[in-house]
Length: 155
Image (cartoon, rainbow, N blue to C red; front, top):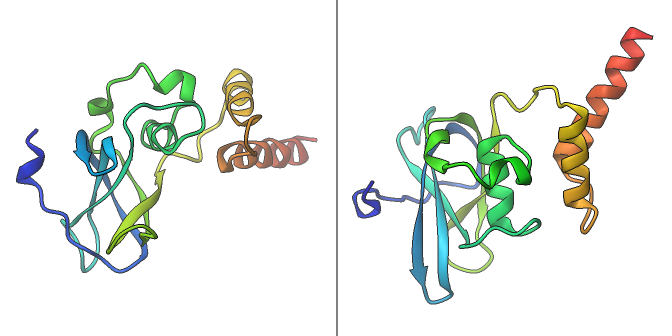
């Protein structure tokens, strides 16, 4: 995929439905990075690409790792060895906000349509261990809330 064939257009900050389109390596004044592109597929901005550039190398708590997890729907340990191209076309909700560092907007979150899936205990343990360094992630809180609701319903 040739990144120069794609055009990124500004959209107003907000929530859009779309798909993960692709990711590619880039280099700018900040150094090497990974650009994550998402295509809006509904509403006034249908077909528009929006993106976010993160660090080039994913570490457990950096934005590159967070986007890798959002796109794959897997924990960091499970997703890091996967080829991102296998997730191209994955549908979900794209959250766009104003960029604090430069003119325009950037993607701040991508939530897969299938993100309400049930987690195994091993997956929850992986998620929990990843965020001991920082803070509890939305994935963990959502999974724990789902388990609590299931227990209340079953018990």
